[in-house]
Amino acid sequence: MRCPKQLVGEARQPVSARPGRPARYDYEYRRCGVANLFMISEPLIGWRYVEVTDRRTAKDFAAVLGWLAEDLHRTRTGSSW
Image 1: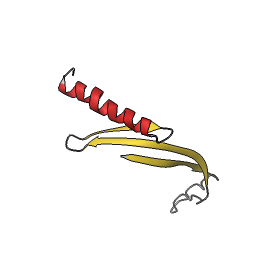
Image 2: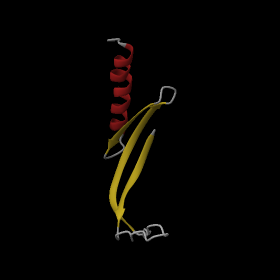
Image 3: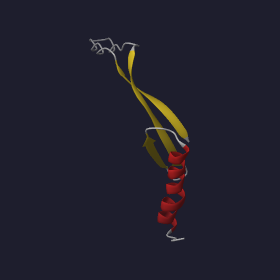
Image 4: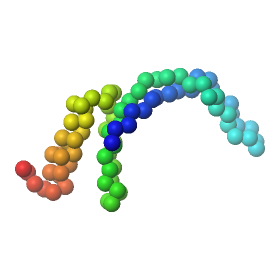
């Protein structure tokens, strides 16, 4: 699964909470770039892996799939192909 995410920061400092009131955050934000997350999961055993990359290219995707098919499979099954 590929999920590009925008990285954002606060434009103004949040106002601290007072007794009986929640902290206040302004809706304005500062853009801090983007990152791409490649997420792999195996829900039946509760395993997940996230690879963070600067961009979303076919080469990046192929590298993650190559790791999954070769390195992880070899580690779990003990085979050496």
